[in-house]
Length: 454
Image 1 (cartoon, rainbow, N blue to C red):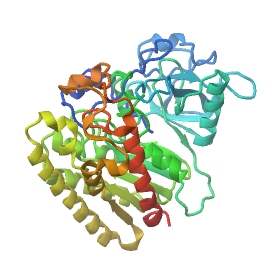
Image 2 (cartoon, one colour):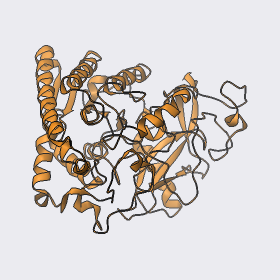
Image 3 (cartoon, helix red, strand yellow):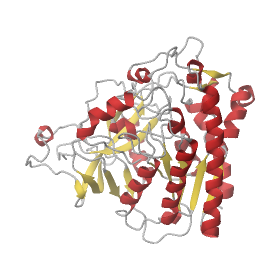
């Protein structure tokens, strides 16, 4: 889950731009409500030996001010960082808010330290990742033990790196072993808010959307499809998807093309990483058609460019997900362009299929590029929800009578008859409930096993 961080000089523009996009596949995630107020992160990378809840003096100094604490810059020297354990505050599925505890060492009770090194560029760039030999499973285990020791019984949401209380949440990339077989050993996802797990959360400084109503970086009331899929396949998961993304850059939000360029930059610094051992998933396009006025041809061409970049960089297993008919989402009950968007989605998906066929012909047996038909799947779900255990496929669980870009800035209450969001297809007027995400992952998993993992 590499976390895109927009430069400080662009953040005011970014937040304003995102707020102006309208209610679509956009808008990030928020400061979660917690037992105690969480700090507003500044992206400070100062490391305090005294512990992560202590903000070192250099943290309040202007960028570039000399200080005694260690700051990450580019390829840092061997060091350590701390571990945040995000967890759901309430088991009630209608209350998705999350907060965190700092991980403790199970052996001694001291602050848990993750050893490794940073790739970063101070606090003015959005390029921060911590490389370590510690596995994601090991980090999650430490977090679960930390939460259990505090009597916290709700689900672990994520385990992320952070140097101090003002730091953002950062991905821990597990360095691959020098000796590897040919099996897939990780899942990497590119896309928009249907897949984002906290990248826009960081880019917006934990401001959007309101964390009482959306869960810590997810545009849903719980995990998204990629998280469920990774758990089912027992693969480490790394996420470049970001809320508001199009197939190419729009304003300051990295598009699909830029996400793949970012991945290549990070992977150049990952020892023993082999793209051929990664399962890639590409799921984007809704923002182009719904929000940004781009044609299906423009969006599909950007996807094709992205796929070519992946293949040229050594990717051999790619799942391309078609776009569901977003015109059937609840937000379109208040829009007048339903028919035109529906037609554009069909056109776009056909162009995706054509692009995939052309790339398969070009690369032959060296590229396994499979198209998963989410359009047909969701068409059936929305037409026959009861067959899949859903009661309502037309309304959002959250009561949002007049959706707008401001919707995501404040807390939204569930509608009176949404007592169980698992019975609703949509959580807000565009994004699915976590139950729908799980349903999608349940259908993607056998497809991937049969076509990309065998």
